[in-house]
Length: 117
Image (cartoon, rainbow, N blue to C red):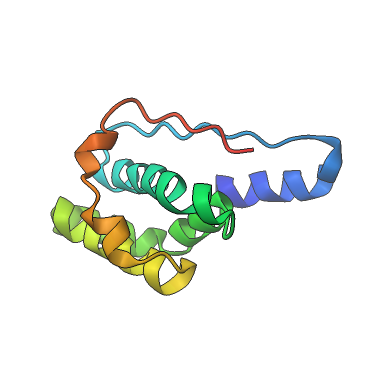
């Protein structure tokens, strides 16, 4: 898993370097696309104001749930995916589910590029 390797590299180099990630999934895979949109919602509506947990906590959570996300993205629809992601951020990261799920995800249809500092 690439995310694990990236985190290990960041831990190894520590303060000597700065980790920057660009989140830009292709819309052809609905699961990763909605997770990336959720990252944008999570950052702009929660992390920006609260400062903790971090964006990395969201990404960690999504990778932990990767198998379930893949299954649901194949069997479910967008509303089911957004509801599931809302449960994850609510139960594991402290964001109020309705804050996450009520936001119109179509607002975030622009090219998703987030620099993670």
